[in-house]
Length: 448
Image 1: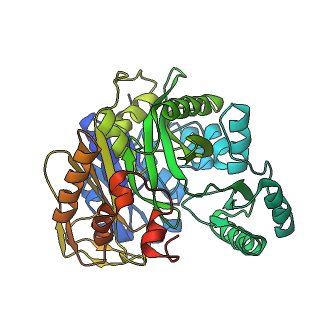
Image 2: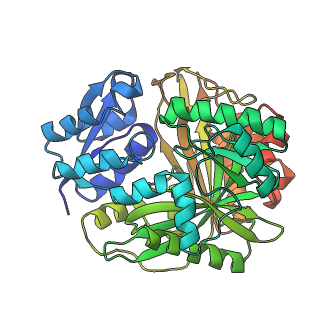
C-alpha cells in the first residue's frame, strides 16, 4: 500500500475520501481553489495546496497544477473523486506517467466507456441489453429524423460525450426532434468540445437503476447490488435508494449479471457503475452508460453492504486482495442530495451559511462539503451535503428520513430541503412506484 494520497477534488467527496484514507493510516493531501480555502475538507486533510483561482479551468480542471502539487508534497497516489478530472483518460495517463498510483480504472476503460456510442457497441457485443438506437454519430437533423422514424418515437437525444444531463432531451415528434438535436449539438460542443449526437428509444414511465461494480486486482468483477436513481430534476439525480423498490428478484439477478459482463468486457478495475433504464411494467432493462468512477450516491451501497468503497478503491489500486466477503445486502438505505438551490425552480443559490444544524441519530450519515460560516459561490455544483439514512426495511428508512429532514436546518443560501420534505409526502415515492417523471409532475415543465 502507498503511504500518501492527493485528492484531486473538492467539497463533500474530498472530505469523504480523506476520512477513509486517514483511517487507513495514509497521509492525506488536499488541493483547493481560492474560493474553497475555508471549506472543511481543506482543514481535514494533513496538508493542503492552493492550486489556482475559483474558476474550475484554473484549478480543479488544471491537470498541470494538480500534478505539480503532487510533486511538491511527495504524494504517491492520486484519487480523483467524481466530476472534474475523474473520467479523464488523459489525466489518468499523466498520473501514471509520473510514477504515481491512479486510484481509478485503467485509462483505456475510461476512454472506451467515455463515448456513449462506443459504449453501446461494446455492450451489445458483450451481450448486455441495449435500447434500439443508432450505432454511429448522427451527422445532422435530417438524418436524425430518418433514424427516429426507424427507431420509433419517443426518442432520447443525447451527446455521445460527457454527462450531468447536459444536452439530454426526450422528443415525441419531428419538430421537437429537430430543435432538440441542434440544441444538444451546440451544448455538447460548448461543454464537451465535440458535438457527436446519438439517438435511443425512450421508455416513458421508466426507472433509472444502476449497478455498483468493483473490478478487483486479480481481474474478477463483482456486483454489489443496485441503486434506484429515478428521482431526477433536469436529468440530474436528487434521491437514490438501495435496493430498488421497482424491480423484482429475477430482474435484479439479470441486471447484476449483465453489469459484471460489462465490467469484464472493458477489463475494469476499481469502482464503477453500470446505469440502466428499466421498463417497470415489462420488468426489462437496457444499458444507458457506464460511469468509470465513484458515484455521488455510493453511500447507499455502503450502508446496505457494510463495504467501504473508497477503502476498496485504495486496495485495488495498490494490487491488494479485497477485504470483504460476499455477504447479502441488509436493510434499506436512501440518500438525499441537499443542494443550495431554489426549492421550486431548482435554480442555484449562493451566499454565506449562517446556520448549519445536522440531524443525529442511529442510521443517519451526513457527508457534508460545507459548514456554518462557509460560503457557497457560483463557481461549482450546488451540492452542499448528502443526507443518508438506513433502516431495517424501506418503511423504517423512510421514517428515519422524515425525522432527519425535519431536523436538518440550513440558513443563508436557499436550499432544496423543503422540496425533499415535500417529496416524502408524495404517494408515488411513499409506495416506491415512482419513475423518472416524478419531479416534473411535482413541479411542472420547468423541472423535466
